Length: 170
Ligand code: FEO
Image 1 (tube, rainbow, N blue to C red):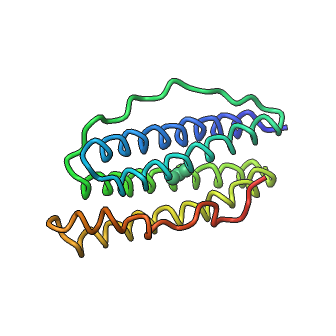
Image 2: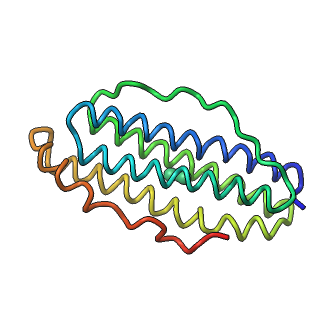
Image 3: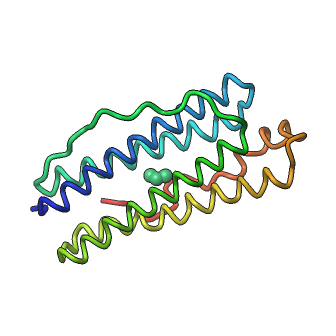
């Protein structure tokens, strides 16, 4: 049985993973209508991963005797200045999610909830990958420069790490 404090913070993460899903969908949609098909593909795929992250939390909370609560999500931005600025936002958002996961890990140690601590290890590894992936894209964007977005858009999918590289969660 989950302690209430742990249940609540896991539900907070349901909201954060769900917001990641719609944030990346909004970014994908912006990229699509602005002619960046490759960038859109990358972001749609990333959005799918975020949906799975949210689902992992929902199922875990329910399996442990808690009750997952689906929130109303904040409206994501509609417009982005350019692809570079958008990926800076992706990195910033992933750093925020990493900090959020770390807070849950810290709480599970404080509450001696070793089951949830174990469940979270998949997310700890996943966040290392997701931040690295966003940084690799920003490095690539700096290299190609603003004048070669065609090449960047064509190649971005080759920068994706395969989904589910982290060990399977329960
Ligand atoms: Fe599920 Fe990208 O954090």
